[in-house]
Image (cartoon, rainbow, N blue to C red):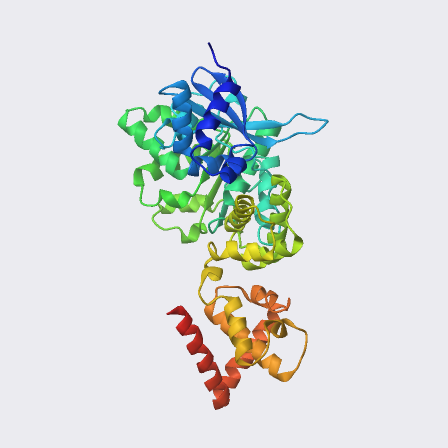
Length: 472
């Protein structure tokens, strides 16, 4: 008797339930819905991208054993991830991903099979050319702030008039996790949506290099070149990784020249401006400087708050304002780390069946953020200093201007700067929401008094010993 997709999945769930706790089962498997069965491929729907990634990271072997037991060797799962739940006026849509459960835990190659071969000539049906773009990257989901306003404005101008503006090429640079890939793919998605006759292609420099190497091995460099010469908008990510690859740089130089002279748009990302790129030919670097170079900087507090609220909205997460504010002050490195902390916090709350509050946020940060993870964190500093002066931690955060409390507060700020990587603004936040200028004044005052007051210097040294003992 043939089994349908619901029966197969229910049988799989029975096997899975025997191998994990009830809480984990209810959290990660109960929300899954089977969609359909085609041969030995069972499609299941999961609520979010995070859900899919968690299952693949933690339960891939369990899923593999269950699906093989039901459908035999070679059976596999395919996920359908809900991207947009839709509303009354429009239908929702989802994105499909293969599971690693059919490949001994190794990355599946099914994803690559969806892409047009880079060595195939362009078909007449241009809109169906695979662009390698992530549809979730858009200008709507890219939060604008002082840290990225120029780059976003330039990207939007290019998206509206590709190849026509003076921003060709457009080079976007910045550190890890600041949104470079998001921005350039948003440009690509905008063009693809509004100019269906344009062939948009996003490719990492590493993939470009590997494709070129394959073409050399197979003696079909001409087909490789022909493919890239037909692109209307070429988006190449992380060009710094072309460093030292002379042959790859040469072929990219010729492709770049042809596209630029033909009025095609070129967009690139890098971890530094063109003048600081090492190991690239001078003739290539000079061309990188033809258009506009725009940087992405670390997001300020307000931008971090906006990013978190946007992420919460898209994921359907509700977190108290105090927790959002605490996270935004504590994680000031990059957007990727900020979103990672938010996801981890939600996972901790879900797995442990806890409400998301300030205490849970602090516990989550300790295992993720280096500043918080340090033995000498800001809480320990405040506790140590307040006990030394026979005060409470709340005294250090209060608005009072009593001399003994002001001195203790300034010392605690001083040690917070010495022993953590928190910004001045973040340190001020942890002392009753004071601004960075107050922290600067505290640091200057402590340093000045150390020079002239022997007793004060002895106090600083005594406290410093307590922090060193904590580290040891």
